[in-house]
Each structure stands twice: as structure tokens, then as C-alpha cells.
Image (cartoon, rainbow, N blue to C red):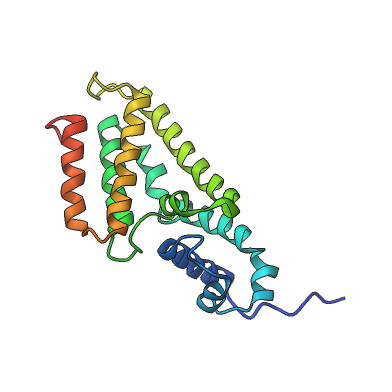
Length: 195
């Protein structure tokens, strides 16, 4: 017996469009009507291919982490602790205020703007943030080139706090050049004049 009708849309392109929409407007700021219009599909096709809105967001979040947000995991492979921190903070500027991306961070927007009905989505975004900070802490524990005044747990929290602040400022319209200056000042404060 033959399967259903073949899909008349490209699921990867549709997922990329959903990613951009969620990134631009946040989870709660994006309606199903917005999604189907941007993705070029109807609701039954959305549900059949991606599940409900919450399940779609989980797929989008994974795509974000493997795509635009992959700089964070890549930064952990830098040869020195100083370079790890520099790449993360400069990467936050490029991700959140780059010429080809929506302003702000998908995870930060989701954590900030999800109400009680979106607990699972918020929980998933918080879990991503915590996992990233824990991975950074483990990497910083291996570094021997960082100022001794910083212990890895606190430095990892500081880096994430600065990155989140950059994302909030980008969402508020701060320019890439302004945020690069902020990033450079933060790096000097964290790491000394060697940056």
C-alpha cells in the first residue's frame, strides 16, 4: 500500500523559516498563523511534519544550537582559556547583532518571555543555557593561562552574564560596533590588558 502524498515543501527550508521567526519574535510572540505563513505550509502539514508548536520549537532550538549557535561549542576547542573567553564574547556579538541574523538570542528571548503555559519550552531553553555554562566551566578548569583571581565557576557565570547582556542590548537595537566596544571592555576587565 503506498504511503501518503509526497511532501510538497522542503522541510529544511520550512524549519529555517521557523527558526528565523522564533528568533525574531520569541516563542510566545510567534503564532501558528505566523509560522504556517512563513513556512509556506498549512497547519495539518506543520503538525504532520514537525508536531505541535512546542515540538517544532524543540526542533528549532536544536537547529539553532547546531547552526548559528554552534560558535559556542566551537569556542571551547580554542587552545587557551583566554581564547575560549574571547571567542565566546565576540561570538555573542556576531550572533546577536550580526548583519545576517535577527537581533538578540533565541535562548535568552525564550527564557525571558515565556509564561506559565510555556513552562516546557522555557525549561528547555534554561537547560541549554545551563549545559553551555557547565561545559564552559569544565573547559576553564583545564586552562592555565587565566588570571588567578577568577575561579572557573564564577568566570563561566560571568562570561554567560556578559553574553546574555550583549543579547539583550542587541535586541534593544544596540549596534554591532557598539557591542564590539562593550565586548572588548568586558574582556579587558575579565582578562587584563592582554586582549
